Amino acid sequence: MALKAGDKAPLFTLHASDTKEVSLSDYAGRNVVVLFFPLAFTGVCTEELCTMRDALAEFNNMNTDVVAISVDSPFTLAKFKELEGLNFPLLSDFNTEVSRQYGSLYDTFVFGMEGVSKRSAFVVDGEGVIRYAEVLESAGDLPNFTAVKETLSSL
Image (cartoon, one colour):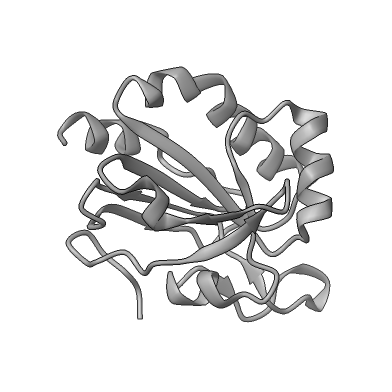
């Protein structure tokens, strides 16, 4: 079942690339953009997260934090974060539980891989309510960052 604007965001706690636990509840009172991405070190994922890296100050100025989630291990995410200079938490959903809760999981991805996150963007407000939800079927597409920013500016 797909999540939509107005739904309560499912709570989660995942290990970040530095192996510390990060919970959605850590951001209570602030907006958070929750991004799901298929795999570290792939072209479109790198473009997406570097776009967010370069725009992070703009999001922070809107009382907004960013987290990005994939099924990669924390160790893979740590290397990806280091190489790309990413300035927000990368969270490992290695067991696919959170991706599944958010309706952001491919049945089968490329090369027959199962259990890979779909590229998705969610805006969760300070009360934990989803204000924007976009789950992309094609891993080659990027989230609509303009719509994400418009949603945030209306909060």
